[in-house]
Image 1: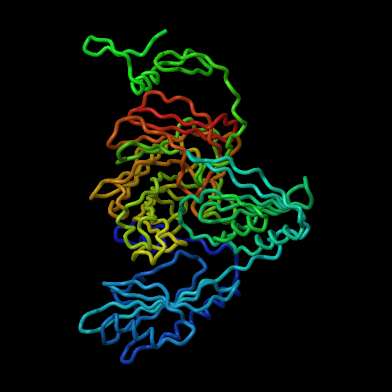
Image 2: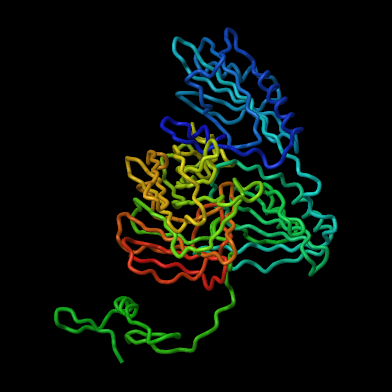
Length: 282
Length: 320
């Protein structure tokens, strides 16, 4: 989606586009996102004297902010109202229902925008935003674009988890590459079952990696490999390794590749902390 | 024993240590082994060789930072990627956008610049000194509307960490956007031997990406250099065949081998430097391999062999 819009310039013989969907079907979460987006759009307080437009005005055809995501519902409405753009935006901020937290601001000209966010629904809806964008259209008139954006989280099937038989874990820092490459520390084996279970829970808490089609990400350097075993020396029950490109974590169970997981900023620090390691992972 | 002297203006003088340092660097080794030299002697003396610790990086993939790139002094205005010594039985399967089952010939070709700072496009970032610009020249399998294969440029502002500029998309703390694109026919693994793919940059003008598959035709897409101001910054290029987007991997068949060669045009005609650095997040399942010396090349060139078979010690080669 992102790429398609971004490349939709005149003279384009073809456009890089999103032709995929999400990595896992999740109608429940998606439907909740659709419902939530509709409710957020209704929360927009229509300024006095505004009239609804049936389509995006030229000045606001392309939203000033856009997110690369395949798990995003974006509902939009368009309005025109007397007044100056910044005054209209300030009025809206004052009149929005409670619960919305003001966020990012885009300063114009040609347009001004502000994001207002609701709290996420853990494990289901990870972003719930109302984006109000305004632009002057002459004659003391302001056009308004309202986007309700809700990102949902595809659920991980129960079978795509670290098997409960895991009693041992090994942690390897992946070798680095380049002029400043350093010898990775020796692999570590964790035999404390309580720690192994915490590590497994950490892996199981990662969300599914939702691919953004057509994105050729920069390299993600460094990383770790976490291997779960039933006992020392046995065959791996599960392996999690990352980050890969685009921030994915490759995950396999019994040697069989599973859908990739999405790394978080805290994942590797938490693994190292649980294991009592003081490695510097790039 | 030869002693460091110079003969300037007809008079011999003893070399300074700095002069000696430069002079000894020009003295060839007597043979394979280990040698020392001490000022002022311009002669290598054999010493006992030691065994280096058995510490070898053996990355099992190419990509996601593991690669050789060609670096020049000055700037690059055009980089052309080709593949030599491609296995006659080469095959490839990969996931489309890193998801679903593997499909034959699902891969990308990428000519990637280095990550560079100072792009005016970073001016709106939360901390412009942290923001890095990046430009990719891409052939993407199934990468365009209607399932078309296409070529285009993808621009990145890494660690922009603020609301992205209009027309750019937010991806984590980064921003990205695409140039126009043009559809091309599918590049098969067998086609790699005849692929010629280039990226170019012109300050104040248009950058370009072009693909030709040995059929006597070529496709070109251009876009303004001002997107990230590549032309005055571009000094390093990664070239190769990688997975089809989304951090995906290209899986080649058993014992498949190819050699990625990058021909460079720019402000210098000297041989590029081969740097152990890669930029793309996509990968292939090959290993960096021992690369044979290059023959005569029409322009500054870097070569890097990749194989699914026996790789030897990874190396790359350059030639002016």
